Amino acid sequence: MRIGVAGVGRIGTMHAAHLAALPAVDEVLLHDPVEGRAEETARGLAKARPTAGVAELLDQADGVLIATPTDTHPAMVRGCLAAGKPALCEKPIAADLAEMTTLVEEVEAAEVPVLVGFQRRFDPAVVELRRRITTGELGPIYHVRATGFDANPPDLAYLPSSGGIFRDLLIHDLDAVPWLVGEPVIEVYASGSVLVDQAFAHADDVDNAVVVLRFAGGAHALLAGGRHDPLGYDHRIEVLGGKDSVAVGLDPRTPLNSLEPDGPRSDADAYPGFPERFRRAYLNEMQVFVDVLGGRADNPSPARDSLVSLRLAEACEQSRRTGTPVRVDLRSDGGSPS
Image (cartoon, rainbow, N blue to C red; front, side, top):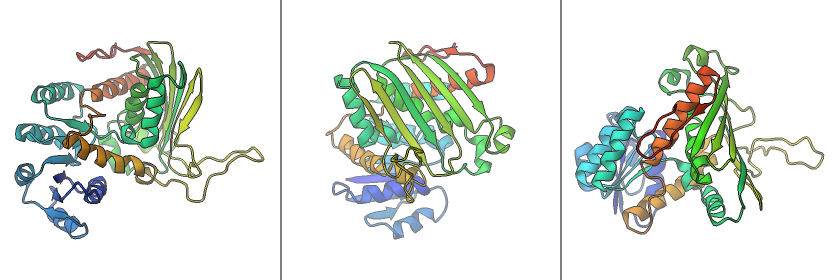
């Protein structure tokens, strides 16, 4: 099996290395719009070789991983659909709701598998959490808490094009939490502040935010996220049910200190960033992609699900700006916040 990787920046190179390590992958084909980058990356990876361009990549690969800049994602996905090549595209598959809705319809009409790279759906602990919720082992869900704090703020030059904290940072929680709960969100409330750097305010954004999601069945989720944690990268999900209370992302590397005499303290090797925290997720993501290509697995992150998280992100932004809760309609036909 030959897998193409379009875009070999930081995350694309990581994915290429993980693909090359899989026995089912015979060759990893590389392309990058930056001249010479694919050739340089190929020299450091077993099984990898550069291609002359997107056309050669699509012609020779059995499937394509898309890690190019966001504004190129729709064209890259459409190229894969036209070539009949399954794809795994880093989120988002499109930057705005209208284009994403159109693209999702094209994906479904083409009947070509397209996986969206929300890595938490591939994290073994999160997958196990969903299994326990789905089977009823946790009982009725009372409350979900999701924590997402970066160790350090992103490059400030990135802020104007980031889409804001809800589309960029908390979009992962807005995807994972409804997927886990398995019920539609009917109301959103969000609030945010600038506490880390005034550059966020200059970009019309915030650097700390909270979100409350109310589900159709009555459960609530509280999402908290921010751009700076002095101890490290902290991303956790906790679920309280009628039969059990469980957490993922809570281990000796979690950057959190307890003030109880016998409580845990943050390890000196606390998670510094997302590649370390979600290493198992990224490894499994590539294995699942290969299994989907081989017909051995279903798609756990279909394109249509991306519409849910984007609509919720838009509702969060609307709520933050108005200071009021926003009712949402998450119908499959593309309903929007109201």
